[in-house]
Image (cartoon, rainbow, N blue to C red; front, side, top):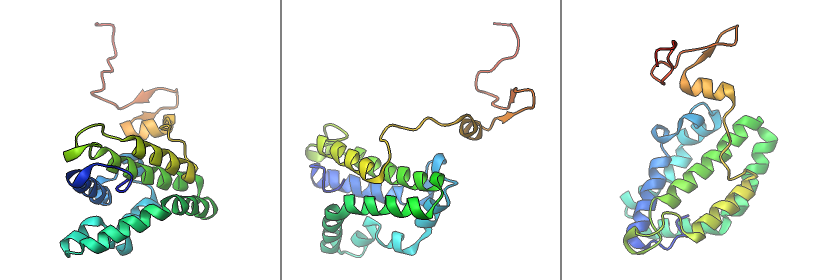
Length: 181
């Protein structure tokens, strides 16, 4: 995304910040918090070592530029490789979660800045949208958001199912019992 956008220096800094933030365990959305592979990647020292701001903190801007340029050349090939490896080595749900997490990171970087000077303009440029679509295809993931199952919704909302098919919990969600409307 960093290379696909034309956001200028301010926009690139916003995108670097978005990338660095998304590579932290605290930023992981609820749907990925139980994915062991995502958590393992976030805690891997090799992943933390390539966080963009580590280059800037050490004053190594040329190395950051070289790393981003190399990554751009191989991003789709690496997405294909990751999808293949995940399909062979991981359960489907874990693999799908990692691939969707990677797309979540890419979308966050794409949305961090506009496509014009000083980061103004459309949040996701045509080039970035094209790159997101290519990454989705390379990862073998639909760019359309997956609708959560009933069990996933119950977990997210903290609801529990009873034997009679009734639902409990969810206080404060506008559920009222009687006919006092």
